[in-house]
Image 1: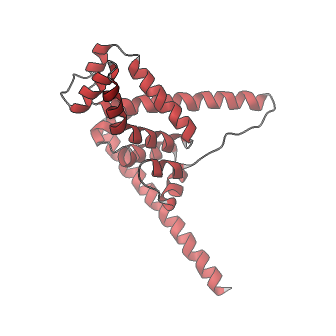
Image 2: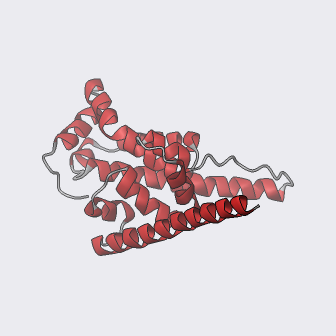
Image 3: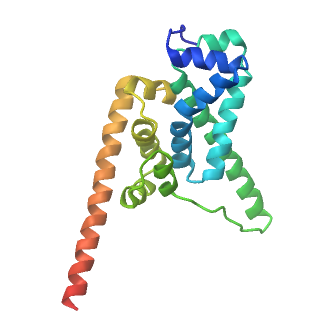
Length: 199
């Protein structure tokens, strides 16, 4: 783990870990909406997102006090924990779904989409949510980390386990693909309107 930094959020994390309820509420107020917004966007399921955020906090509570004190960037650390919990949940769901299909039960889980993530993070643009839903997981993840969770590129690199330059490049490529998806949707609407007016 990185060396500790003397930030108010680090102190709040340490105090919350030690059982300070006021610090725990302050920590949640500071990072909770961003963690949940990221998780909902990543998982496309509010209930699964809540589970991932809870698992991240349980993981932090399971650390030794000395380990918590050495967390250099609590937001990036918690987002990485949410990401790991989310990926664990996705893997578990895939195994469960495979077992159900093998047993002849074709039940599928409901997909809530990114429309739920944007309001959770203070947004709500339906067109943007639909466009994000059409991106691949990796593109969606970097955009959520940057624009929903509000991370810097250094923090994104920590969460994703990538060099900073790679995180920057992935973000730029994801933005380009998002623009292309959104422009394609707009072009489709314009063409549809032309067809309606001709008919």
